[in-house]
Image (cartoon, rainbow, N blue to C red; front, side, top):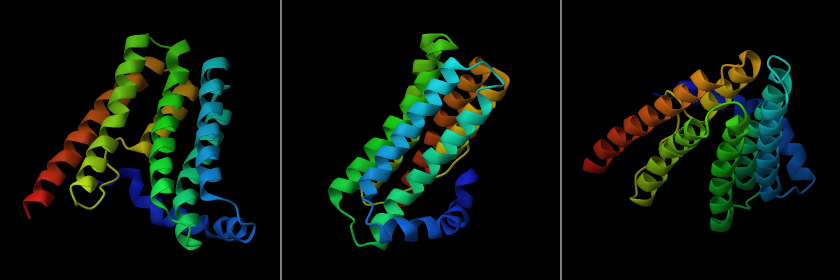
Length: 191
C-alpha cells in the first residue's frame, strides 16, 4: 500500500548531500517547512495562471521542490538534533497547508465544489495517520493517493489541462487511501 512513498528512502539518500550542506550552514528546519509552503504556492499560481501544457514544467519543478523540502525539514532536524514538538506541529501544519494551497490553484480551472471536495479528501489520509499516532500506533504513510501521488496528479493536470478528471481522482483516491489507512490502523490497535 505504500505507493510512491516506497521511494522515500531512495529519495532521502539522494538529498543527503543537500542535508549536509544545510546543516553546515545551520539552516533551520522550520525555514525548510516554510520553503515547502512557498513552493506549493508557486505551483498553485503557475497552475492557475498558465495554460496547459506550459504550466507543466513550472508546476512539476515547484512540486518537486515542495516534496524535497517536506523530506528535508524533518531529516535535517533529526540530523542536527533540533527535533522539537513545536517543529513537529509546524511540519504537519506546513504539509497540510501546502496540500491545500496547491489544490487552490484549481479554483480557476474547475468547479469550486469539486476543488473543495478534493481538498477535503486530500486531508483525510493525514487525519487518519495523525489520529493513529495520537492513539499510540505507528504513523502510516503512503497509499494509492498520498502526498507524492497528489503532486504527480497535479503535474499531469498542468500538462494536459484535465483539471476535472484529476480532481476526481484526487478526491476518490485520497478517500480510498484514508479508508485503507483506517483499516490498517484498526488492525494495529487490536494488537
